[in-house]
Length: 502
Ligand code: MN
Image (tube, rainbow, N blue to C red; front, top):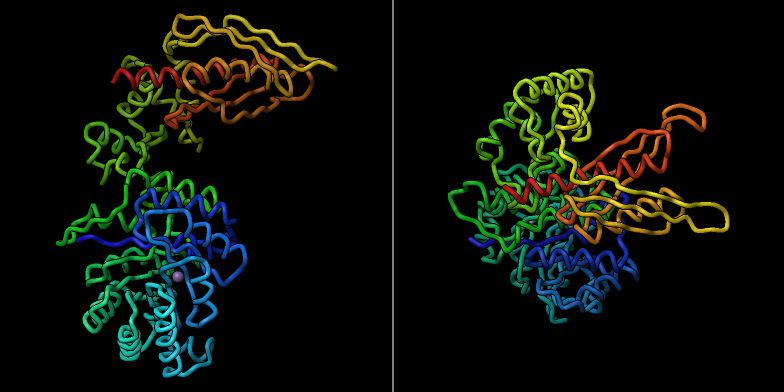
């Protein structure tokens, strides 16, 4: 059964405390959602501001292939604003629970029902498709809810939505009102679930199981308070879990991670590491038992393959690590310790882990280097020549000569200072050669004085998004920076060479 995905990242998601998007940002997200394959985007609430009106207009006139909806309260001016924004599809709502009627709208049930009916009739008269939401439906008297839905259905509504506005429903309650609503009206029913009790996706699934054909969702589950049902979680749960019925959506799941990163970057809302599907740790393994299992067959500890949602598996060394995991991580860099060496490396990893330290690939490779000697790690990149000039009245300038896999390359460039010039010269070579770029640079002085040693940490990234860090210590800031960059390049190129081989 095909389930319709109605994305409200740009409307309910934008109601996340602290989030406000410019029209350009909203358009970028709308395009990404369209490419992701959502059936409809709720572009915004045109009545709230001029900028919002402009954003919705930009989205409605962008030629997207998905449907574009906008929110309107159940009154003429909101519905007119939606029509003026170029929308052919309006999502209009009025609260129906006694608590909202009494304390927010100061309206009787009859007045609310009449408002709902006239809003639907008016929107239809303006030529729009209408989805009607009974706000706070899950705290509304069930008899009255059906009365309102029946009345708006008779008035010409095209779709009905059941919002669990404060996340107060349980899965079985949601299933009950969905079945009743669909049975009584024969209209397509959507569910709009909030996550106040962590049940948004569970409630949406239960609603779908009871006959809802559409879910309102947001990328990363952003939204008011604890957020909305998350698009990525609901879609993957629909497509991958056993429900008796087979569900499909139009989502191109391989794009989920990119969509998540785009929204989190633009909205400035970080994704928690343990978030399902898109969290940083969702496909990460540390424990030795798990890494051993995943290396023999990923299905042992991964319910779905990371590639399905546009991600990659990663492993980290730590105190729970085992020999298999350590060897697999080192093998990514072409490092193959013998059994005695692996045990020695593992012992150091556990010692550091017990001391509470985080062990990144930088530390792991450094430990392998100490145990195996320099011969353990192949040098694909080496520094053959280097000079830098700087001063007053002259632009800092650097020359770098590298040997990469037996061939010599030279690069020259300017910079704001000698370190910048040197790293630019390195990037000139590697950017042309393999699109490898230096992303982060951090410098720390180890102790005081102008002759004190310094420590440089650098992060390089390849076009596939693989990132590798490296560190170097020395007394000359410029040379140490170049050495750190070269170590980083060496590691990422080794990793690439190993990946190409396998
Ligand atoms: Mn909502």
